[in-house]
Length: 412
Ligand SMILES: [Zn+2]
Image 1: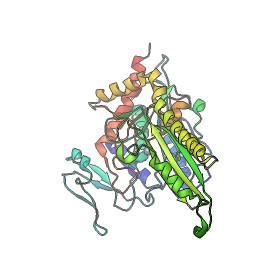
Image 2: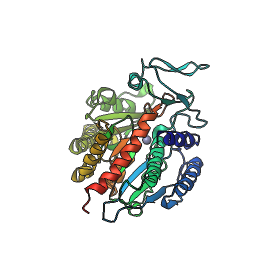
Image 3: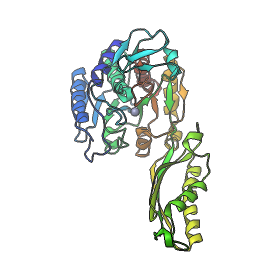
């Protein structure tokens, strides 16, 4: 199985599927549709049923049950696109047959080195086979490793009918990296009772909590007057905005927070005397704290307006996504099932909160509860991305174990 998943992965990364945040089409890039069509052909070839690619590039397929009793339908989902943050075209993966520790020269000419000094976690994989980049592009393990693992495990289940399983649905989505992966995911058509995204990092990762997320846009209005005659007349909107910022809790920012701590993150400050725009993203795991953060900003804007006696600032808040934990908790067996599956494959589950969002968090709110499990890669979205091939095989085994456990646990 390890060879199959590796060969498949190497083929997939040769496709350029970078998504494009500036595009208004869906999928956002041609390359994703081309990849989706190739993938669908492959799914038909390996023997899956109900294989479909829709206009937006979503690929869905079914592995029918090989047992007679009813089981819940479980889904496995991965995203096909790669991040627009780093070149993703002409990916030339290199295989390190056995990593012996120390520096890996990715690109001699450009002196690009994957070093354990900066990325100490690589030392965990001494003695293992790694796939790395040539230093000029990302690798695309995020999330083509997930795609390759799902397809390979379905192929394995088809070849091993002695492993009993219920109906399984698989889905591959475009445009996850630009936050649109769930936009056109038609949950009723997918028809699974619950699903897992294979979009996590290192071996054993299991995630069912993510941030609640909102954005805030605040406009400050100034009054521009010739500076020579500005006394008691001018209002410099940049200075008003600056005051606003200094009133915020100074340590609740990304660079001072970790684990379950939330933050306000200033993402834009664009000002002239007359008008200043600032933008934040607001993140918190706890729903109440999240709401409190939003109302803090609103209150601060109100106070400014009271102080100036007129409207000097306006705020627009927009919710982006919510913590999937709310939707997972009532069906916590999904997490237990993934844990048991990992333990049965001798993998220690590493439960970590996602300090971000996943497609699974949006899908969970769309009616498809969807924790996230590891796909095996490290250092996503950059040239230092790498993946140990044994982790890819392990992800396949976990998918197979989940499929078989769903059948075991259902009443016969
Ligand atoms: Zn991803």
